[in-house]
Length: 287
Image (tube, rainbow, N blue to C red; front, side, top):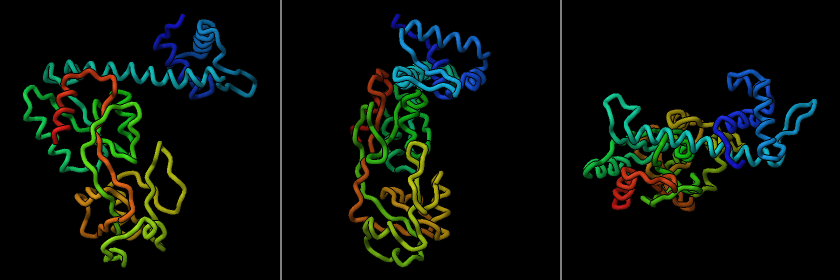
């Protein structure tokens, strides 16, 4: 049989991620023996071995690696379908049925562009309610895939648009954000080389896919932390020009002459058939 049940996938993904039946059973809130039997039954039905079992533990076969990736995507899709269906019917709102869209964006993104989009869409007939969901760095794609968001503002080259449809909304340059009293703050322009090796002022490091690139700069978790560390003279950051909107008096912004442009896109799942989302995209394309 080629049909897989959501329950089976959930069991297998837990075992594949934990690589330990006991921990997977605990995570799933069930006993270990029925979990082991369920995985064995799944292997018999598929006609392949998914796990290598020995005294040292459990590891994935090539087929198991494939099912782990496909299983995660399938579970995300099922969860996304349920979340988007409830939103479309207003099931998770206290005021009865009402169409609603969730728009994800990086905290600290362009306030002017967002407000312009929201105001223009609100003026459209039959516009849905738009809930704005601020998120961390590069989290928009995950929110779109698992259904927590219907649409997102994403920024290349920082975000990947793979698997999504998108419309380009805005292109802007980048700036270096320095402590206001630093000697480089008086310059009219800087290069990336100028800010990459400043004594006692290392570049801030943002997470990408949950990990930080090596370097001496502080690991940044949110915009408020970044603003505080720049003001204290502990780091320098490279950001889109629209970041000027949140700068403090203790900050200085200097244009970077050779930084790649940042392009803001509105992005959504390629398979979406939401009429409310289509209306929002049409509005965005006219901005």
